[in-house]
Length: 245
Length: 245
DNA sequence: ATGCATTTGTTGCATTATCGCACAACTCTG
DNA sequence: CAGAGTTGTGCGATAATGCAACAAATGCAT
View 1 (tube, rainbow over the protein chains, first blue to last red):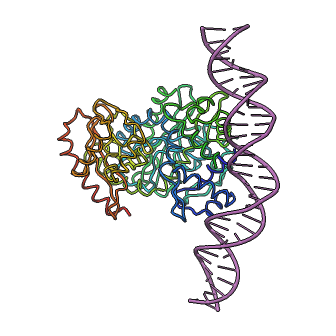
View 2 (cartoon, rainbow over the protein chains, first blue to last red):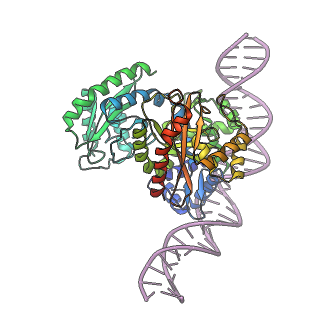
């Protein structure tokens, strides 16, 4: 069913950077023929997934139905949310739980504190796995060959001056994550942002998600961050293992 | 492009109630031919949107890419989040912002307090508009004919003993919302849950969203809830009007 | 403004793939 | 092991695909 696959590619062409697309722009992003792209967009508009002002198309909230069926059907967010809230209150920092989707992490639950955070994150938000503490924890749980495959699938574009951006450097870091049992990331995703993450395992010991807290680099040095926040994270990680099937 | 429309219907067949579907089940929910449903599901699986264990299909986090492009491209969540956080801290209760999509409201931002809430809500969650304070505010902003049309499009299934479930009763309530400028809902969504909502307007005065707070009915009587929480809500509503285009 | 070059939106058409129906193979369950 | 339910597979009718051509709009330097 080529038509379906093509249409989904068209929907994914709408991102935060390109929220408004003309037919030609969408055609170029997707690599589809202009005629086909046009037919896709008109079909999407007809069914309410897109709005068309005669020149540009934009996606409507209707497309949220496609994705949130998944989030809503996942037991994970509902289960971890109370732990996250309590942990967030206890340590006074924002906490998040994410899962791995290909080479990206997807936030599925989050407890925000009222600190100013440069990046606005919410359930459904995505970041590259290789440079985030949440991602490193989950990549470290994969077989090495699979991790390398994922890292190769997308270019490791450095996001700050600190970002590890070679396969070797990341794999070495993953080995460290495996031995020490947690991931600490110092301003690799965003200047001034530090984070510490632990894996979240189900009852069978399989890593199904990751849990972290992030805070401004100015508030504490990295060593102190780990000392302060790792134990509570470990505690919640242990507790979650008992309640996740 | 029938294939695309059919595939999207298949994706929407996966809900929180029916997260795992066989081919026949999906065919029955969508009303499509089994052969077509099968082709859709196989195509979705081929592209990573579905997982197939030989018997059942489940959607993968990949489908979140479809919807969250929309959320990420919306300026609204990012803009309102700081106000929401501050308001939530100030009044000590959870606050939310939602938009209207058809006859449903869609949460786009939320600041949770660590109180136990019976319903787990997060950005992307949906509830019927007719029985929620957020929905009433936005329905009240529509022309009456359009509101009636929306109310007719879905059956008004009462969710509690308090739920208004006739068109007339809801329309009367909408008139009240218009005159008093806010919506107060007393345990119509969920037993023991009260909420108060204000509209969120852009600079041109067009209602683009709604803002509310919800709390346990046991904590305060309705009159006191309104007295306590309406003024801060009104304040934020006014302030948002200045920053939204 | 004017003319020219380029991009963009739209339409027609032969090729190719999909749709829905009917039938065969399979899998449970009593 | 029979019967209901479900899954997988050809086949003609139907619809989508990609290419190309054309028209309209846009950008740009004069």
